[in-house]
Every structure is written in C-alpha cells, then in structure tokens.
Length: 535
Image 1: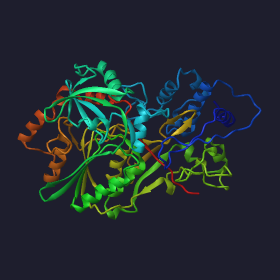
Image 2: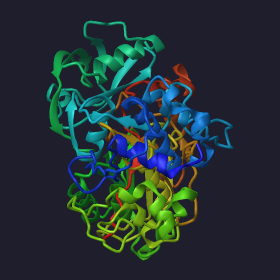
Image 3: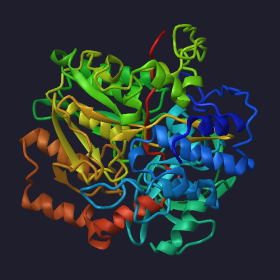
Image 4: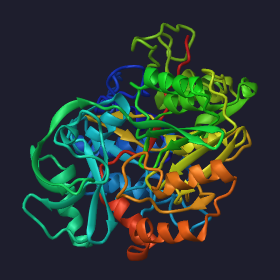
C-alpha cells in the first residue's frame, strides 16, 4: 500500500468505524460516531469481513507504537488471514525487541500477542475481566487459583462479596476436587480443563476444598454479578519503633478512588512511615488510578516534578500541521468531555468539534507530561512492592513512577513487562486494543519489556492467608523494615525453605511463569489512558 489516504477513508467509511479513547464513563465500550464519506468511486470493494481486516491493519499503520515495523498493505495482505485474531497476532510479531531478538509481543506459551487483543463487547471471558478490572463490576465466580506445588492447587485470591467469598473460599484454600475431578496434579494438558471450569462461561462450578483450618467443604459456586473491591486486605504492623502499613491491591479500577483515599488516610493517622503495597496479581487498569496511588505515596516535596511522560510513535508526533492533521484518520474521531459529550471546536481541523487529530502527541507537550501533586498526609520514607510475573502495566507504572523520588524495594519475582499502554479503537462490533504509547519516569527510565527485576527474589507462599507475617514476600518486607537488610537468620532461612520455597523446588521458575501465564488467560494486563484536554 502506498498509504493512500483516499483508500483508507473509503474503507473506514464503508464499515462505519468510530474511534475514541476511553473516557470518564461507567462503560469501557466507547461511543461510536460514524462519519459518512460520499464518493462515486468504486475503487474500494470487498465483503464486510474483508473491509474489517483492512481497517485493523490501517489503524495499526497510524496508531501502533511500533507502526514503523509494519510492512505495506500489499505485502501484509490483511484479507488473506483466516480470522481477525490471526491477523492481529501476525501484525504484532514484526517489531523486534533488540535485547531479546524476539517480537515485543511474543509469548512463548501462547499464540496470542503479549499486549494486543480484541474486546468483543461481551460480558464474559477476557472482556468480562476487562470490564471488571476497569469499572469495578463483574459477573463470574470471583476467585482465582495457582499451583503451590505440582500436587497442590490453591486459591490465590477471592474478591469480597463475590459468589466464591459467599461460599467460604479464601486465599490459601486447597482445591481437592473440581466438577468431580480429583486428580488435579499439574500437567499442561490439565490447564484447559481448569480454564474452562473456573474461568469459562459455565453457570456454576462444583468444588471440594480444604480451608486454612483443615476443614473440608464441598460447595457449588454460581456465577453472579458483584461489585469488585480491589483492596483485598489492609493492616498496620508494629516493627520495632516503626509502623508499617500493608495493602493488597488487585486491580486499578475506576471505582476505588474514595477507598484508596480512606485507606491511606488511615495509614497516616496510625503513624505509618513505611508501606508495603502488594501487587502480586495486579495486571493493571486505569492510568488515572496509578497516578492517584503515586500521589498518595510521593513525598510532599516532590510536588510539581515530573511523574512520567507519554511517548507516541513518530507518525502521531508528526501531527503538528493542519495539513497533517486533516490527512489523519483521527480527524473524524471526537474527543469527548468528561460527561461523554462532544466539545464544540470550530477552529479545529474538523471544523465542528474537537477530535483526536487536534491533540499534540509530542512528548514535550504539557498534556503528555504528568506531574506529581501530593495527596493526603501520609509521609513515607520507604515503600515496598510485592510482585510476581502477573504484576503488569499500571502496576509497573506505579513502581516506576516512584523509584526516582522514594526509597523503593521490590520483592518477589520479575514482573510481566508492559511499559506501553493503549486506548480502544472501535471497529465494527469490537474494540481493538493495541499499544499506542510508552511511559517513562522523571529519570527517563522505561522500556522494561522483560519486566522489573526485584531487589529480593522470593517465591510466594500460597498456603498463607493475607497478612500472615510468615508469608514469604511479606516476611521479607517486614524483615527489611526491621533490620534494613534482606539477610535472614539460618533458622528462619531453614523455615522458609520448608514452608515457603517448596514450590520453586518442585516447579522451576520457568514452569511457574508458564503456569501463571496459562491459567486464567482472560486475566487483564494493561493500562488505559484518558486524555482530558478541554477545548
């Protein structure tokens, strides 16, 4: 393709596409504004499915963060792919990470891209998790699982007031039977069964489990709607003369603002000076929520300094002239206000209302530089982050934001690696999520595609309840708070080896990563930004 804008316009108009970033609404499904282009030419033709495939590629050619790696339309041949998903995967495998020699979106255990996906606007599967992670509502069982050892399947978290919670499930419960199946020994062939039974679309699941009091129970959990509270646990520990706060935060939803403010205010009132933020299963969500937590934790003296900067591809950065903006497919895509309404902007390139073509995508633009603004009165000298390979995106953004301005310690295993974010692109009856921007902190640090490396590598103990001081990851945080070191006594080391590190002894680090990636594949990992430019 010679990047013919007429062809692009005809294709987009034919299938009636609307495009918009997520805005301040209760739904993550963007409002669709269809722009009709009148023309007498028949140069562009094809079935609706073919035109949809064309549009997937054409949007990526302008918006994808690594768009320069994509071939021409003629070489890529989007219509040749059997499905939209096959096309998306192929499209995301061109851009290579020079540090690994593999595509940025390559996943060894999956045929799906690491970051990109389609949201088919349903309420189940990955889309259901996406909506729960973003908007704080979900319709499912409300729990997740992970192997502690190859023969020990455990509940890793349960959302409060979810169907699972109402049936007595808690973190640490050992699952001994699922839908009558008692052989749950880890095997790659078992993963599809677990995903279907626990994370699929079934109306109910039958479980037998042993709780932390060694009591066996058999229950039937029926899927139902509930409000997601991503704050799973909080506590304040006395460590010597210090007060150390602890919060388990599972998702960057948009319904948690008041609860976070209250929690951090409570920490401040109890004299907390060091904080443990448990993000071990947090795959991300709204950038605005990550910004809120960063501002609650940052020292007051850092107000006004850069928190992070957005970086877009060179094409978007080049939209600095009226001619370039009018040639972009963004010219017909409205930039809504906080109420989801059009913003009148007659001097913009559209001539009627503000569009995404009117935005400045240069990293030097003030709209693309987030600055710290201290919130609350919590005065921290150090913050600990508990992480695993499931810690991703907005979680990693929060950690990266604070590293230049606060004493940050990371405990656990290397994080997922997602320094890029996205906004939804509406095509037909689905939204396409592909990376459109990268973030870097005030030190210019970003690019952690292989994940953030912990200061103390340790494997979690799934047999312990939230807040148990002997749970490995929390133990090391409290140890450092007490002694200023991760070095432990020989007796404690032996204890940890027996009670907490059996898992890595029986599952290699590669197997643990593979299990985490394979189980609950619908789990959302991402960060969504909402431009708030007013015209």
